[in-house]
Length: 155
Image 1 (cartoon, helix red, strand yellow):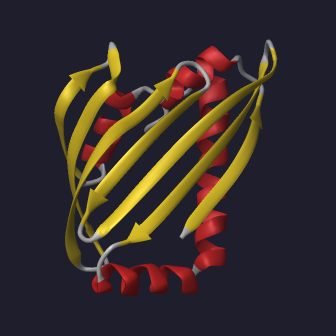
Image 2 (image 1 turned 90 degrees about the vertical axis):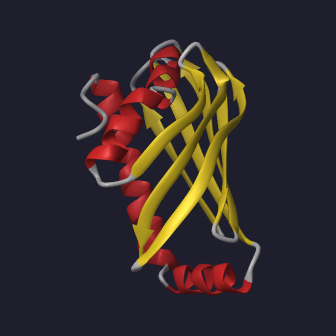
C-alpha cells in the first residue's frame, strides 16, 4: 500500500530538514499519545544510527515494531524503515529547495505485508484508502505549516 503527498513550504530547506529530523520532539509527542517509544541506539548528532522499539495499540491489538533510519542525506532526504507484526514499511521524506526561502516536501509511505494476518490488515486499509489519503495529506500539510511558522510540532 502506498501513500504520497507533496507540500510547498515558505521556509528554507535547512529549517525544514531540522524539523523533519527533530526526533526528540517526535518521541515526546508519541509518549504523550500513549505510544511506547524506546530509543535503542544513536544520538541526535549521528542521525543515520538512530533506532527505536515502538509499541502501540491499533484496532484492539497490541502492535510492536522496530524503527530505524535507513538513509540520511542532509538536507535533502531521510528514509525510515519499520518492521514488525508481519509487516514492513518505509517512509521517505524528500526536500527540494525551490528558492532560498521556499521548499517542496514530498512524503512517501510504503507498507508491505509479509504474513496472512498483515495482508488482511492492509486489505482493510485499502478499503478506506480515500479517507486515509485525505487524512495523511492533511497531517503532512499541518506539519509543514507549523514547521514553517516555527511552532511546536507536537501539538
